[in-house]
Amino acid sequence: MDEIATILHVDMDAFYASVAIRDDPSLQGKAVVVGAGARGVVLSANYEARKYGIRAAMPVGRAQRMAPHAIFVVPNHHRYSEVSHGIMEIFGSYTPLVEPISLDEAFLDVTGSRKLIGDGPEIAKRIRADVYNQAGITCSVGIATTKFIAKLASQACKPNGMLEVDPAKVIDFLHPLPVSAVWGVGPKTNEELLRLGLRTVGDIAKTPRQTLVRALGEANGSHLYELAWGRDYRAVTPDEPDKSISAAETFARDLEDQEEILRELLRLTEKASARLRARKMSAQTIAIKVRFADFKTISRSKTVALPIDGMQECYEVAKKLYLALKLDRARIRLIGISLEGLIDSDGAPVQLELGERESGWREATRAMDQAKARFGAESVRPARLLERSSEETES
Image: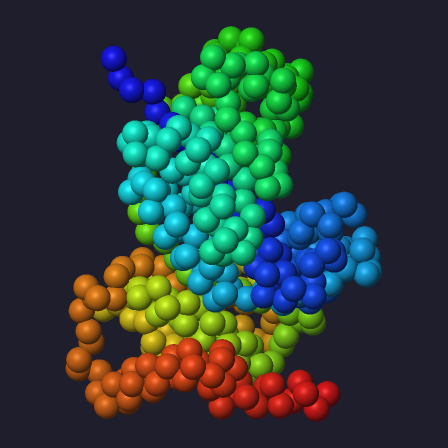
């Protein structure tokens, strides 16, 4: 007889905001929102801020109107990656079967750890204590026999909670939940389910599979039917590598000047490539995203002959992609860069025939990284970005 699995879903509570508060204790007890610029979006809001209706993905300008007294913090993605790395190491000390979903959440299969450590709740209790003591933030943990139910359980016990769903009581836990709770039900599917008169997961379960298939298609209909009965056969897949590292900026005003736009692209490339090198990765594809004032968005990408990780190397590719668009005084609302096709730098071949200029840039980048690690992220920057900072200070 197969052993019953024990799956944990561990999810940090308001991760970005929690990291900001941990790094600046004066923010404790205050409404904190991570997101900058009236036209940017909220990345995270702590629970004090959520009392005012502020949620992730909401425009920052709207959040400011909802809670003018809230403290808005500029995102620090490099810092979030650092904290996340430490958290994932904690998870790995309990089981090798860790599947990161994002920087702040992961599935853990601890079935094989029970004989050494204890049952699911005991392991979850220890993980929560380790995260708090070592990372200084709280997390919520769902415990179940499947990934789907474990994730629902972690959401149900937020913030700073722990919930185990007894295998014999999965249906009792699952069926009263709204249809929007089911993994994969987005706004359009939710609207279609409500149109069919299905408001709870139990309603989905009582609907014939073929009815769901006719309304939602074979894949979606069958998927929802299975989940509505708590059936999820997906295993925890450990060590899934990041597919990309990206950085984007929504400007406070639309930009038209090409030099200004390229300077912003350089700044974003500096940020993304630093995160790439910090994780000892190299990119095989460079992509850019451009959003215009009318919200139309286009993207372009280029796969390079050999993987790269240097700021200048990545920027040269991104710059060429942007210039190839031949935009003439177009009003740009957002620009972003994505470093994709990531591989371990230790195993990446090195480009040797590019000449002294590229070799010099590689050495300069390493020196910049060392200086930043010792003296702070703002200690060494490209001259063009220093000029920008000076202009902002004077204005």
